[in-house]
Every structure is written in C-alpha cells, then in structure tokens.
Image (cartoon, rainbow, N blue to C red):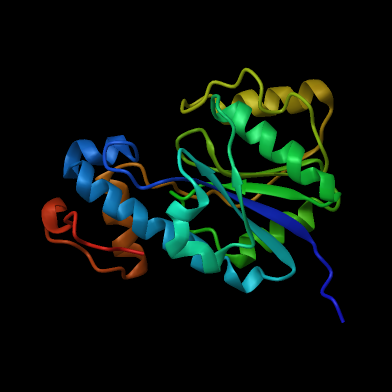
Length: 221
C-alpha cells in the first residue's frame, strides 16, 4: 500500500565553501571554521527531517554547486533541485512555483535554524490545510520557515531581505492580497558565534572553549 504524500519541504542549501557561507560567523572564527560548522549544520537539519519520509518529500535546493558536490548527504533527500540565479526572492519563488505542481503544500527552510524538526513541519502542513501562508518568525524580524498551500504570485517580490522588515513586508503583501496567514512558534537562526554558543548550551551540544577549536580538517556533519 502506498503512503499518501502530504507536502514538500525545500531545504535551501549552499555548498560549504570557505568564504562563501556564514560570513558574519566567519568574521569571528575564520572562513575555514565557519564553513566546517555550516557543513555540520547541513547534516543536523537534514537528519532531523528524516522521520517525515516518505509522507513528506525532502528536496535539497542547492545553490552554487552540483548534486554530486552534496554526495555526503544524498541519503537524506529524495531529490536535488538547482536554484536559479537571482536574489533570494527569485529563488524562493521559483522553488514554490515548481513544486506546487504536485498540488500539495510547499514549505521552505534554510540550514541555519537547527530547531526545525518533524513536529514543526507537521504543524505547518496541518495549518496549511486551512490557510494560505504559514511563517515561523525569527527574533531578527525575518522568519525561519515559510509555507504556502497553493501558488501565491508575488509573495516573494520586493521584500527587504535580511532586515528587521522582512516578515513585515511579507505580511503587508498578504494583507493586500487577502491571503490568510497563521504563525508557528518563534525560532532562532544561527548567524553569529554568540548564536552558536547559545544553541550549544541550550541543547547540550559540545561547547568549544574558543572559536578557534573548529579547524578546516573538522569534517562535521
């Protein structure tokens, strides 16, 4: 008997190339160590989503690399999807348009919020049965998760990305178009060394004595 599909989760990823990821973190611990941590986070995020399969399709939405570059994580996704060129809004819009062809809810997350697990995704899918958009707000004025129940043209256009007005701009767009919105619990992204230390203390992850404890040879994740 086949398992009924309930939605698609797009995990937006960059290849962990030193100097190209988590630049705010790299300013403190260096580009090599920052890339090593980011590599670890990819593994954490994807592993936490595994209990959702096969009911939910896990898609690795990759930017600036080829699927074979992500071979260490190939067992954690159902398929790879290459993000198009453009700003974040363009790439999110393309992903939602493409995967809404399945006529199922689509959810997008990144790889810098390590608190997203199966229960959050399942709650989002449940809410999307009766609303147009769901957001998991973040403390910086953005969000760690966005999901839609159907294609919503313009949702990701002219948004002030990476500012304290990001979520506000989305909500204004939703209000203008009379799209219904529901909210998930607030989640925290990891953008800085302080964010990472706080996460480690809260979850019991190994806590480095200093930022420099992470080296280029640390094959995390």
